[in-house]
Amino acid sequence: MSTLADTPLAYVDGQLRMEGAALSDIADAVGTPVYVYSSEYIVDRLNAFATAFAGVPHRVHYSVKANSNLAILALCHAQGAGFDIVSGGELSRVLAAGGNAEDVIFSGVGKSTEEIDFALKVGIGCFNVESPGEMARIANRASVLGTTAPVSIRVNPDVDPKTHPYISTGLQQNKFGVPVEAALDLYRDAASNPTLSIRGIDCHIGSQITSPEPLLEALSCLIDLIDKLANEGIDIEHVDLGGGMGIRYSDETPLDLENYGRQVADLMSGRPQQILLEPGRSIVANSGVLLTRVEYLKVAGKTNAPNFAVVDAAMNDLIRPALYQAEHTVVPVTESPAEEQNWDIVGPVCESADFLAKNRLLALNEGDLVAVTTTGAYGMVQASNYNSRNRACEVLVNGDAFSVVRRRETIEDQLRLERLPDET
Ligand SMILES: *Cc1c(COP(=O)(O)O)cnc(C)c1O
Image (tube, rainbow, N blue to C red):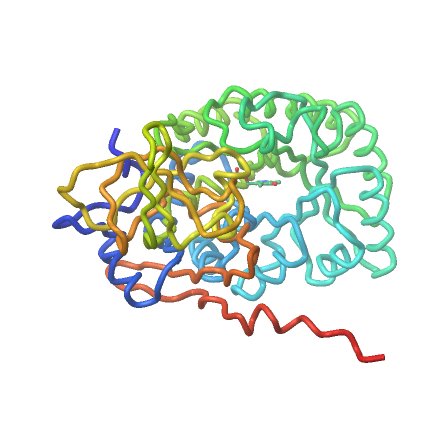
């Protein structure tokens, strides 16, 4: 399997391109480190969902937290996608990008009163309620604001998604959702409360799931509950299956979307509910690269000690390797005939956890550009100012053209919110 499979990247005359744009031209124009995303790839992925789920009424609600740049949200909106959000900040982003509140689903275990009020005032599509306390608070706020709140309950089906423990969310030990038995009672409460309007049922069992079984097991669990609710006269309009579709970082077998879609259509056949999907990673991860330049090469003095390539991107730009033991492919931007050596690709941050990749065979010189692939999801959104580093800029490619969709941060941006204490 080529390391560039499932990406918008290809070498043309030894130069790495995204769509029709040479990545070295982008680095020369805007500097490094820089995140670069492919618009064509994102559109292709949204189309792949439409094809895979053609057998069942459905809608994709792009999960904003994977990559919340306004340009990406505007692109998803233009393709007809709705959104799945986890904060009031993300709701503001969707609205700023031209999206509609009624196309938004609001997930998350800790919605504040302020966030609930904001969502109710702009006319949110649905709240995915994660606890009895949250349901009571949403009902109360809707009543205070003289409106009704559209709700869906996030059920925790207690299935193991077989993924990294930090991105597993549908097990009893996870903080997310309501156990199945408790969900039934909560629906009864909601049905008897005139300020709540029951819309759907929801689950999201984890992320980077590569086999359809746990996802289908979760759907079966929701269907059982829908039938129990129907017996009590409580009707459900939509079934939200969450996101979590696994993708290829290096040699993983991605979730077979067509197969998943077909099996969902089979399980739902004869049922009136619309299927909602909340993919994040599987829409944007492989659309993006983090471009970084080699600052210094530190060749091992002793055998068995690693060689270090110190690059200008660091864990504050991309924390996934340190946080989730993620393995991102690293490729040269210009192909070189020189002999390859083993390198640990590390950043300038003062932490031993500051690495982007370990033990990679590459031919590197100081000043070379490399691309860290599959970084369109959970990359820039988790960037920080650790070590007072300015956050990277972001570029969106379209054909052979590209636009800066977030300028590089400056030290003035970083200092703006801080003050010395008043003299006493
Ligand atoms: C994070 C999240 C998603 C998206 O997950 P991916 O693995 O990126 O597809 C969808 N729904 C909810 C509720 C989430 O928290």
